Length: 462
Image 1 (tube, one colour):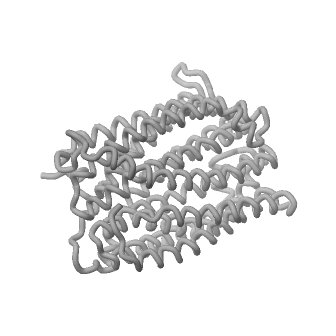
Image 2 (spheres, one colour):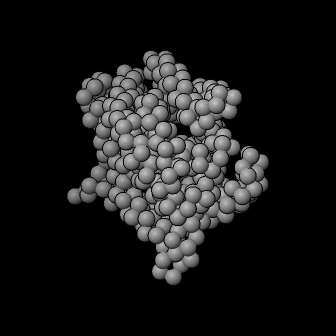
Image 3 (cartoon, one colour):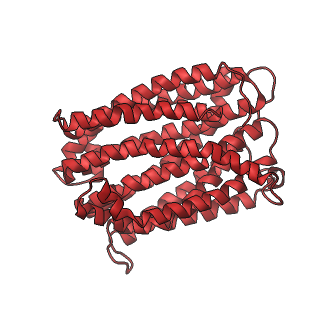
């Protein structure tokens, strides 16, 4: 009897007549709920890091924020580079070609390892990079110390992301969700040890949080690989034995991964540029902005999870060759995220002071953060919609043009508007957050038009 962990959460639907909207809603939610919880776990770990480092000291929080500005770019570039796995596997499953999925995973693991090592090496040059983007020598030195400890966890992160995408492409997100619960608990415990100096460890502040991050990434990878290798029905997915057409699969991986990695890197670089602007405003505005942006990121995990579910559902429909289902799968995902974000909007707009106090007890930081958190309530809906629409387009194999639209919204609108509002306009950190809203709105509209066009065309498997 197949266990709940190995049972597909979104089985391949039969080709033929288009599925009803209710069926799409049910299947998307089966995928989206565990994906959302798993993604939220990642941000919960970052939130716990931020809160615990913030209570250790405001300067330590600023060092952590400076390091995160670079680390988040690398993480999202890495996610983009590995995302070819979920797209290719979802389309293979939709086409009934399950055996190829394991070959896709193993090729992705090799490439993920290489990229992870390169990212770790880049972290070792954190201080000159942070100085080059305008951080003060004190912030650059503190951030570099954090990045050195982060560096050796990047290969594990890339292999873990590839393996997670493989399971999600198979319609099996539940194992990643369950393992995330354990990772969150381990992360909090190790933070207590290394940030504050318990059980004989020195108190290391932000660097202690970085040590914890790297350790947890390797543990998560080991657990997920063990699960895949022990799948009772793993033989039908080609996870062992010779890899067929390895070079061709590697080229497909890169053809999808390069534009997505570039787009994600430039997107988060735009957000990091806004964070750098906050740093130019001073330590307190930077700390407040980091808190507010962390809360956006926590809610955004709902969008990332729903986006991943939409990618799989649209990819399945492409594999089946069913154009009507491509459209229905995509717009179902959009509806789900709008409802979720509207539910989150109220608490963010109404309880800014209470939320800010979770992260810091500094009386100078709390009011700055609270004002920014109130603005994020407006940001959430549009930011969620644009993320899910991007997932829909990825699932259909459309990567270059949507990436260009997204980058235009962030770099063409958010960054220059943010600078103009924060400095010449005198709005400070609040101006930076209003600029994020402008970019999210523009991206959601343009990507919505693009998906409407793409979903009317006959799709084909990558």
